[in-house]
Image (cartoon, rainbow over all chains, first blue to last red; front, side, top):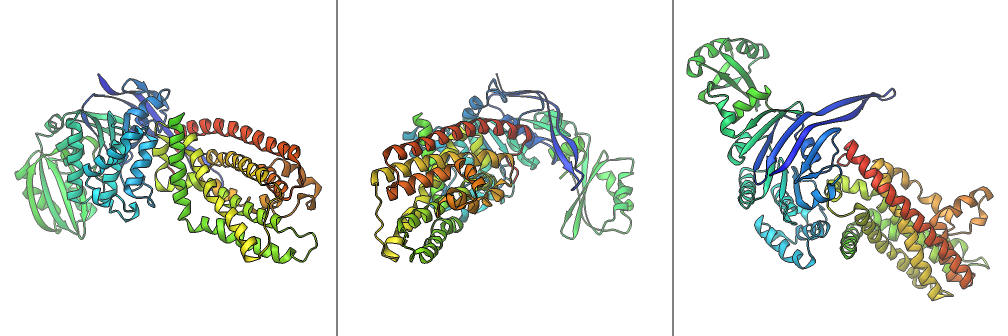
Length: 323
Length: 260
């Protein structure tokens, strides 16, 4: 049985431009998205900013109504049967917001436990159990305003688990966390999945999706552009190698020259302080290094590395850009 | 039903804790009634018809109304700014119940104005602050709180519809003081404002409290005012509950819950 089904979902938002003479404009967030997630799956939803990931999550968590199309969660319609869905799901939106800062972590959990209908007798033990699960027992009675970002993220996760949801929606849950905090949070999520919870995860960290998700859907411009296991998605780029060039002061014209080379599939440039990391997907791998360096002309080149294509490279090939 | 009451109580406790540590609302509940009470007593104390109880009740009402107006009208924008509005709306509990609890918590906190205003009159000025009809006054306070609670329930749907509504509602603070007769009878106002006063629940709340404190209305007269308060509360609650459903559905369509 599918825990989640989306059929031809469209969602547009109305925006306005201008101060005195206002012009209305429709922005398409989802453009015919169809998708199914079986029960018990840890499903990854990837896509660039503005692709429609958060809109999808908000529709499935009953916070938004689709403009057209149907969506169900455990068989319940997101528009007409929102209350049934709300009892069965939990969600975390990335970032620090979503907590009462003047209350302690434990008070936050007790309040949300009441809101989510946890039985009165169960609230105390459940709060203690979840604070232990996310490693906040020692700080439980401190005001949330003094928590670090990682602690707030873990408290969010505890909050969403209070009523033992069957399906969890995690929208960039590790965003902004330090590596250790992110690793701890990933461990909790994979343990929850191992215990049978269906999880839909959106992330910009492709290694995270690769390591955690059983299947991944890539959406761009509001519709699904790829769907499969991480291995299946990576199989799309087995013909590619990646040359990474660390350069200083490379010009846009240099990049365009590289892009024009016959053996170059795609190029991504990341600014890293004063350096730029130019990642070139190519069918030639090692043999491409010399012509690439020649094409860069006078640019100062630091490190050069050649590696196999990863999920991130498959993603770049699909959406044509990275954030 | 028990579940809803538990949620309302939890929301009331949360709101009480939140407003009790807000400097702005403490100002509204304590400092403002202090100034209003003290200044009015100084201005009126030499008049032969001076009634210190009237001033104490009026000062208490000013604090009560200020806290309700500011805490109630900003409750939605506060939740939005914290990022908790979506979490509360997406809970399997009725948002009407949650917000009802919050307004109840706000009013519970605002009662500190009543105690403080009594203290100003009795201890600072040394007036004998005694109410003519203690039972009637207690019931008047109860019905006044019910009507003010229902008034506060209208603020949330407005706050969901228009994100800046709190700032505009804040402008109603002093006009409502005057039109409701908190510190002076509305008969002193122009005739055309009297129908406006009659349409305001705070006017009936002030009338019930002043009349039971001074004993100027008998039981039948008081009962009529209480009936108006209850009727007003019922009408406002019905309007608010309909508005809640409509604006939440509208917010789900427009995607405006998370916008701050």
